[in-house]
Image 1 (spheres, rainbow, N blue to C red):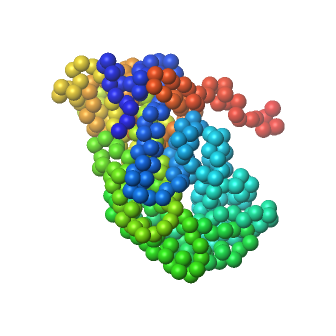
Image 2: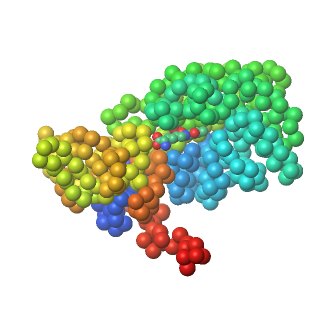
Image 3: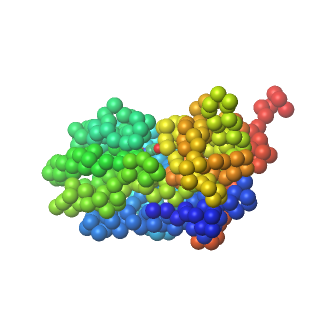
Length: 427
Ligand code: LLP
């Protein structure tokens, strides 16, 4: 469920007209709904509680949408943050999320980042390899601290909406095998700078089938039991993120209630604190990307191109993962939907063929100046945007009820150029 709907013939985000935002801020622009963000977080939290699970930490995956205003919206509800860089830790802190609710994950944390995480006192560092375990211990010990760590396991189970976002197979770069995890956990218990508190996994993203998750979680449970049988304390099991979002006309993900029920089954009788790292399921449906039609280019021999002012630098997912985003007119014409749809290739202005959002998509008649919304674009949209082709970074707007605010302005061309410096020999 989300809060983007037609009101008085115009697509609105909560109480605000998307046309009005586009006119005030210009296009392309991302627009996020506070009510949808809040709803998705609370629905998950409540489903876990209703299934009787002890889940004190729902660490929102900052990578999905890292705008500080979005983080604060979730942080104010009690969400933690799953972070993968010093930049993300700093964003979470800037949003008022306390260190005790921050998890630091990632395959290649630098020493500077680990030192920052240790100094910050994050809740848990998810360690992904043996060398990293030693580095974390050395850095924390040198600072007179013991860092709480979890070992990230690679359960060797494939899942996820695309090969590029499947992380749980043993030939993916993430985590260690079960036998390695057992050995590293035991070693960690004897290291001066770390305190092993848990194990973690994450098998992929945009998962619409519970079966691979259930299989992975059963294996994780077995690992917890084996580690405890060795007499080692283990309080936390981090089950990662990965539950898919409903992209219109695509396979539907399971409900949070079904997800929670599956976990309750998998963990029945096990006394453990669970942690979660959801990104997409919280943010995807809470955002749209607004774009304006520049031209409709109808080739006499066939193809019809809808050329937008948004491009792959603003929304990279179709180019990178062949991802599907529903495209809707912001102010539909009265005849729309009455068999008037035509096939369009929807493209941006960037100089490569990959800058194609979709081909042969049936859309209502559209003309220059019309506004369209890419739906379900709140996750991995703005967060992955760039300034390729020297297009200023796409701005972001947050809506709450009938109020809205620009939460990341579009840089001016002067600001864009001011970030660069001439070398001395050119001055
Ligand atoms: N935890 C870890 C360790 C992760 O690697 C990820 C996502 C998450 C949590 C959050 O997963 P989610 O709940 O959002 O599925 N850019 C791609 C998605 C990349 C996901 C990477 N890892 C896309 O646009 O589809």
